[in-house]
Length: 406
Ligand code: DOR
Ligand code: ZN
Image 1 (spheres, rainbow, N blue to C red):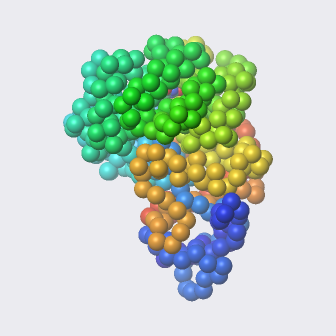
Image 2 (cartoon, rainbow, N blue to C red):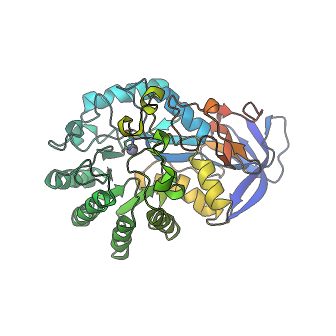
Image 3 (cartoon, protein in one colour):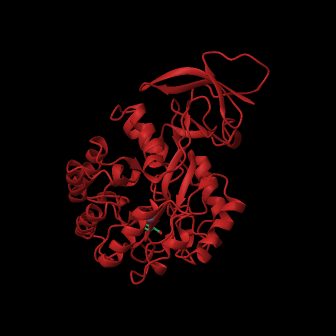
């Protein structure tokens, strides 16, 4: 058993000092716990359940030079996530059981945090034929054609009905037509797809929303009572805007950084509840690919290692959101929407815990990056709340309390 001393935990939206005794499950939480246990002093850090990141790209099988299940889950552990959902733009695409099995076997072998892979909506994300939902529904929580989006609405509706039947979420990379990265490409898709989600009643989740019009459409659907429709935003769309791009490949992703007005609308949607979770869209590429000039380098930036400190520093520390909301958008809401196991810092729940250094600033450097990719707009930026310790099922899988990276 491990005894965590000097933890601050979230209770009723405030931080209180506690000690936590754990093995695979949380055994006891109290003001003081005596006994002869292996002890970790977290020195006043914020201890909370590991985060759930429902949008990551781990590139395996198919693109192991960018990331693997092993390096991706190590980056997750470092960043403070004990469950992740890898996207299906892979080779082979997980569009039938045989293809999905390739990924499932690697996860079984190499993952150090829980991985719930997405299947695709269409065969090879080609927008022509339906993926084999009948074969894969037992093994996935959700399906998506992330990276492109489904434009074939007849096909989408048919897959929505199957998703409803099997209680799967469909996650939408909203983009109509494919390749239109402009704001209208996003909100046109959102408007079309909302109508289908209302009609079919399936659980429909919009990925990385970034325009005022998209949020307005989702807000309206919520007002009409369609709680089956949800959305996520990524940290970069909350805190960066298009004026910061300056042809720098580390600021190139899809959807792209938007206008300041759209960034503010993104924050507003997070604050009024239109958005119920943040997700990183962790999208590693090789250093060679990201060192090409802006117009010919691929879309995508890292996210797992910086999402928690960015949200903590820019929103919690500044008093814009409270601790309970922080927990909801990182842990509870992703679990609820996607049907992942619940994680609470309460006796009897699984010991998947992290410790955030909320009192000391840390400047994020390229050298410390665990992911195979090095493409992050947050390199050189200083934040509070970096994760220092990750415990998964009662075992330490990441420990930086010793100040190795200080
Ligand atoms: O920036 C992005 N990168 N956006 C996407 O939609 C796909 C992702 C990737 O796979 O690299
Ligand atoms: Zn993505």
